[in-house]
Image 1 (tube, rainbow, N blue to C red):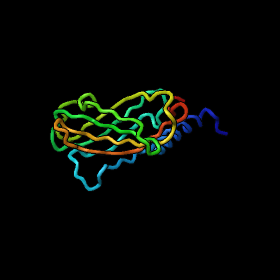
Image 2 (cartoon, rainbow, N blue to C red):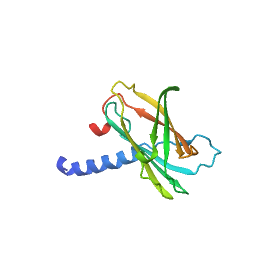
Image 3 (cartoon, helix red, strand yellow):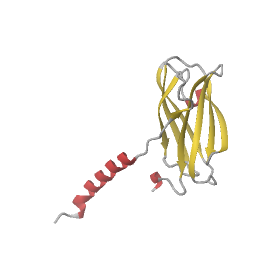
Image 4 (spheres, rainbow, N blue to C red):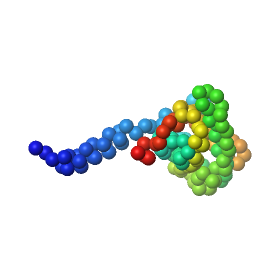
Length: 154
C-alpha cells in the first residue's frame, strides 16, 4: 500500500505539468493582414489570465524591429461585446526602454481594472506609432476579465 505522503510529490508534479499545458496562448492578429509592418509582434502575454477586477494586470508584448525607434506612442482601444468602452495613449518610452534598438524588445503595460469592470471577453487594438506618427504596427487580440479572484490568488 502506497502512503499518501509518497503520492503528494507525484500529484504536485502532475499538477504543474497540466497547468503548463493548459496555459492559454493569446491569439494575436495584425489589423491589416496584407500590410508589412516595421515592428513584428511575436506574442502577447497577459498576467494573470483571466484578469481579476481590482487587481494589477500586465500586458507584455514581445516584438522585433528592423530599425531603431527613438520615441513614439501606443494608442490603445478596448471594446466590450463590440462596443468601444475605453481609449488611452501612452508614451512608448514609458512602456519600454528608449531608444529601442534594432532586434527584439518588450513592451509592458500594467494596469488595475476598476472593481466594477464587467466580467467577460474584451477586444483590444493597439497601434504603435513613431515620433512622426507613422504606424509601426497594429495588433488586435482578445482578453478575458474574470468574475472572481484570479487563479493566482487561490
